[in-house]
Image 1: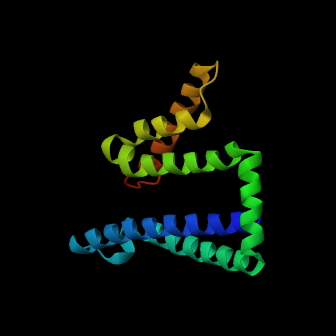
Image 2: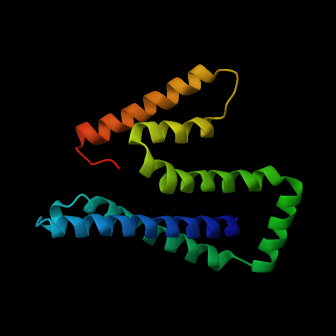
Length: 155
């Protein structure tokens, strides 16, 4: 369990660093346009990234206290041998999330990119219409709530 906490903490720390870099760029753009820093669109993501980084570092520190590296690696090897899908699935989801953020989102409008991201995560089963309906309505709701109601600029 400590190894899983350690890996989760590292992944969250990397994600928060990426999020912090993007919010820093938003803050810089806002300052260059003459707006004060407290009115920037990057302020809330910067605060969120900082808090997420603190939580990730706390999770890593707690996991390091419990982690016995040799025993944890032996346990991980046994898990891979017993159930390789349990190890492969989180990596595939992480790769799909990176692909969404770095390749799909910059090229397509936000609702369409989110729809294309959610659809494979839900799994294609017999009821494809229901999955398309759920992914589409969730994407539209996210776009409406954040873009129109909260007036947050979407990518």
